[in-house]
Image 1 (tube, rainbow, N blue to C red):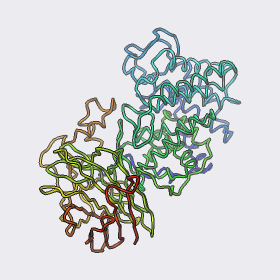
Image 2: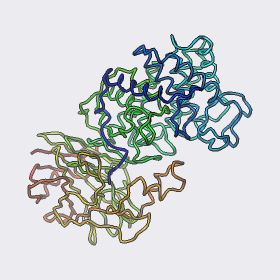
Image 3: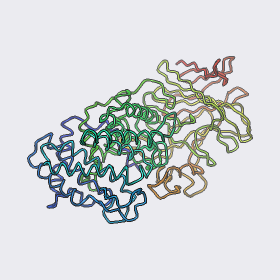
Image 4: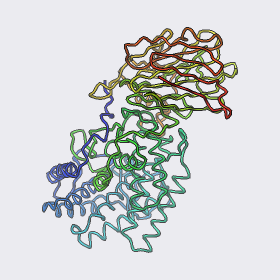
Length: 610
């Protein structure tokens, strides 16, 4: 079983002018064959997300005409513009819509579903999208639309903005990408209004960003992020927010959008594996966007000097939104327009700066969560998630069923890079179930192919073991394939365990399911609402790699040693107590892990050499 939505790195798609012209040429031929006598450019199977789609295709045809001068396009642009103005602009309140602040405003809006009262909750984002399609068309109207049509589109756009910001509550779905998109629509609209009115709309858009989005950011892994459907970050919508921040900066020149975009970009870079895999987030935890992410990843990857294009996207949506038959859909056309118009090149080499919440070298990476517990490990093309035991999730020592990975105090980090090796030492104070303070020192070392993990903690009672991860997917060259076992070696005994019980609270890697589906099954809300991925936190137990203590450790310590990734070398690490700390010697390196108390400032001490 393959993960269907993470097919390949987005920077692998050609992004030359010729490639984009080929994309537009395909759109032109599809839509000219589809256009109805009334001027409708919607896909015949379109039902949901429909209110902006014909207008989106219209904007793509307008862009194609400016690039190629195709004489067939002006008439199609005018006819389809008239269709939207005549058939897809609603001014009567949609029955049942719960988020109005002003009833019977008469302001135009776009519907998520055309049937009156059928699914009104989606009208707010549909109107944001329609505003974006409209302002793109205004940008491209010269030579295509006559004065009367241009005035009508401008007046409609002004009405969309007022409906979004006056007639309704702002951002009713608590979706950062939608909210920032609305701000972008206002900034773009402002350029098409008389100067005094345009300045008011621009100021209103920036104020909404500052007061309704930026002031409500959520902290995760040291970064402040625009919240998304009840969570700090969504790996589908987060990169779309990044694209909106890129466009906001390009349109307005306001540095606040660049600053926040760079912060989000660095966060994405830290949580993203070398192979571009990521999972988790409040909405669709493994459904990655495609072309909607390109603008932001490319623009901000270039600004921060990071290879964000390694992000695995759904390449079925590599250019534009499509229906199951592959036919073009106009729902996200505004992003394709912006992507084509922006000439920022991909930055294709990794950032070399050490990052607190990531260890990365060659083909190995570890993404750490806010507690500095690994959330995702990649080694030798295999990806490991945090495992679960007794409703506790993470990587770390387990004693009497209690997982020692949640910090009770400040977590300290030391990064070292030398002799072709990259390492991170994490010192974390934890308490056991009986409230005894312990210091867990976790050393991660990689040569770019393999990952060595050594975890040392004061001697634990009973029969402790290391919870060393849930084998999840492997890159087989054709995509990410679900797996149930992986290449892992331990200095102690190693076992792969599976939950003894069945049910949604127990994740067995041998079953044909995914983390996303398991999270939805345990969610409090229906799929697509609230924060379904909170369901994953309700997991009781999962498949897990478990390692017993390594032999030869000092008497007062339990030391666990695990190697991820294939190797023909014997794995028999040796340990010795020195006055400066614990010496760890493996087939590839020697490390000295300082006393948990750290240096004179309490910071971890680590020396490393091959």
